[in-house]
Image 1 (cartoon, rainbow, N blue to C red):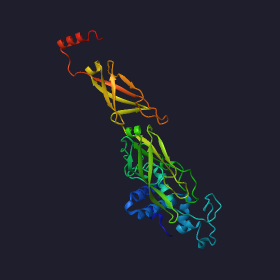
Image 2: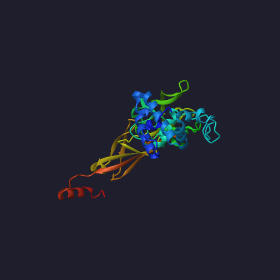
Image 3: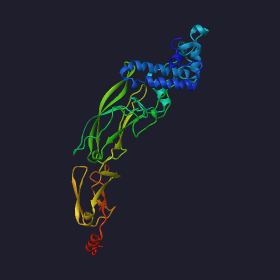
Image 4: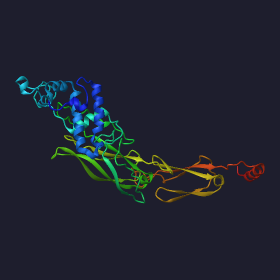
Length: 374
């Protein structure tokens, strides 16, 4: 009879759909290759075996054939010749899967095992990442910051972990649509899927521009061995001054390469790291500045360290009231679509008042002093 699919899943022969799913989920998580990097070959084989068992037992037609004729009959596309003297195969069981017989039989591979996993978990399994395509359960390539440098001191701030488990703000449906491959038919051709990875950048890096070198580990299909293998590659991203949160940088064909499909596109999505001095609104920068009451009432100046290291000396020639906004033209973010132009810097003032009230004498003195200032 060959493989005992019931024993592989640890279920009885009358197991219903819910029981099969529960058993499969538990074993698939246990043996997923990306959770067992120290014993990858054993885990891959077990993971595939569990997927095959579920694929057969969860399909009414396959399960019926398996129960009657075992693994041999299932994979021959019909009963063994000795079973009915003809071995003509089963209607609908063959390369097309839509009828007509044909005897191509049932086969199962690593890619189908992964697709079943993705279909059942729906992209939402936490706890460990995946180097395979799609997002959701960490289906992004493993990405490491390899090195960076920036004009005017921009560098740093890449901040990638060893793997993006869950893709941060960019959650995508697991494998982005399309069902798993059916065991009774050939692989259905699908559009290249897109893998999205957040590219974390500081506001300083987005102001000055920078260069990011990232080491990407992706899966490629080795035709010689008929296996998926890890491949490392260095990708360089030239961050342009003025890029906004959400800017997408696409590297065509640099994602995972699965059998029978075009390579996936790898897309980095800019995610700005919060800045402790500035906020960004479009192409404008906003700085909150706190000054003392005497400074708010007198002519003077304030110094603001800018993102590129310059010190902006802003003169104050009018009374500064709480919430007063001073606009400094052309000192905001560079406009990526209009080289040489910038937005504005908006300085929002907060006036610090004395913590203690004035006594009557101090009040009279202040009123006399300010009498002609109102």
